[in-house]
Image 1 (cartoon, rainbow, N blue to C red):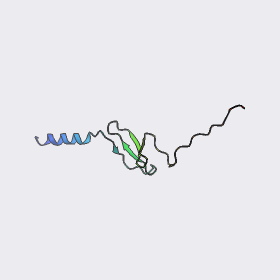
Image 2: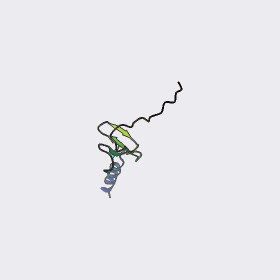
Image 3: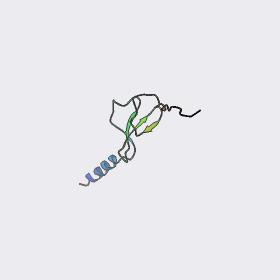
Image 4: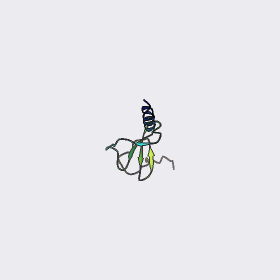
Length: 77
């Protein structure tokens, strides 16, 4: 019984991670995005290692940055 206590304490410490960890591989994510899990909240977020951008919104499959919407010019001349 004396030996079980340190083992249980080590197991509890090993599972109580506070930092981020990699999510299971997701083949639907566009390259090079990676899924990460926040160790404190459990929230899934996404990281692009090439640009070092992190975001909670799932990245789109296009590699290009989002285009600004075209707004027609309604000024009166």
